[in-house]
Image 1 (cartoon, rainbow, N blue to C red):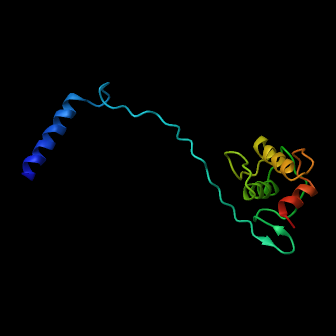
Image 2 (cartoon, helix red, strand yellow; image 1 turned 180 degrees about the vertical axis):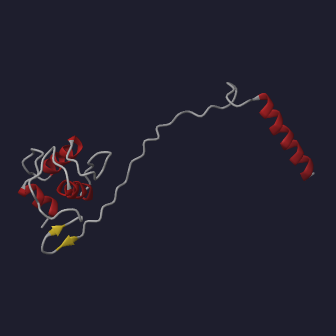
Image 3 (spheres, rainbow, N blue to C red; image 1 turned 90 degrees about the vertical axis):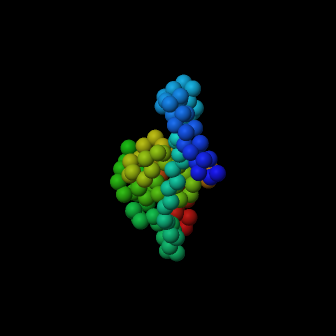
Length: 130
């Protein structure tokens, strides 16, 4: 009985393949879906007693603003991500662009700092949480 069922299933599959060729309007079409995924970035920023949080890129706390690039911007972006602020789809790229500036402004607004998008002493202190 099992063998006969197996043959019947194979015959049904062959018949379906003949009647419903790939791309046929009668075939079930998959609906396109939005495949944009949330990119989860994890950063490791341990807290040091003498310094505060440090993500491994730069310790200078130097003034930085839109248009800057390099290690200090990577440190800024890593700290922003560490505290839950998105710096855009490129993540930690070392380029202080519009998304990084927007993240800085959100942090400044949330923490009661002057909202200017510029990372000076007060914003660095807030990020480092000394």
